[in-house]
Length: 202
Image (cartoon, rainbow, N blue to C red; front, side, top):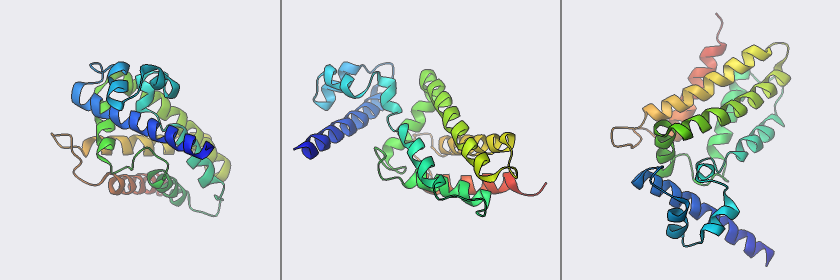
């Protein structure tokens, strides 16, 4: 019985995320209310608030997974592994994590990317959250590779990779908001070029 309840909660949460992003895309972020999302998902506003404190939280619903992936990857990391390889492996783990609300190549990923670029409050929220992820990732890199990679270099590397990926995903959208290349393919190519270029001699 407990398993059925958890599965129902998981489905409800996923539905709220998908419905919210769809409504944000169709009617605008500011033009969509919590009541609109709840009604479209077939639940009450009270049920919405059981899952998310605000509609902004829906856009960042999977934020906790970044910590999970970093912990999983760095549990198997060591100084013998080239830095760039570990960075690429980390992004690959992020891109393929099966507990995201939807895959990186899902159409709603493009919707989320457009929202982050177009809505000031979401862009600000993304930058703040991204900084937290980057700081934690940088600390783990420094701890793994010190003294070969100092704190400043680790922070610069993670900042460069995260910034490059977001810029590439935004630039990948055509005038209709559709991705020109698969997002997963683009993310991996971007991180490989950025990390290896950053770490190349000179």
